[in-house]
Amino acid sequence: MRSSAEPARPAGTPPIGDPTTTPGPNTPMPHNADDRVVPFGRRTPRNGRSQRTPQPRHPDPAAGPDNPALWLAQTAEAWFLKRGTTLTAEQTADTYRATLDLVQLMLDGSHAEHLIGPGEHEHLTGMIQGLRDAPDAV
Image (tube, rainbow, N blue to C red):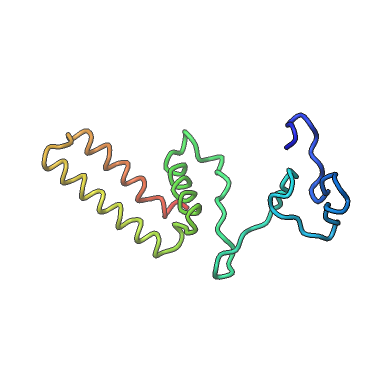
């Protein structure tokens, strides 16, 4: 393997070596044949249904410290997009909200059993509500 100080060959250039063992320009190279730089292009992978895989949106400049609800919604959406789904899909959004309702039920039970205090319950309930609103904001 080359040192990082040495320049890399352009992609598709075969390694220098014995011409009888060096593949020609039209011969496919094995994946680990040499230390070429892997060219990254703007190729969108396809899923099994031949539809484009959802790509995370670029963060909105308005989402940040001044707009935490939008930032939270975009973060939740990016999390789902990484897993091949989106909060804009009605079924995903319904399942997401049902799960948050179950978490809220757990928090309410913990508060009723005095396992968490009123301040913690209020704070965590606000966080759950912020997450619950995410599908409406994306």
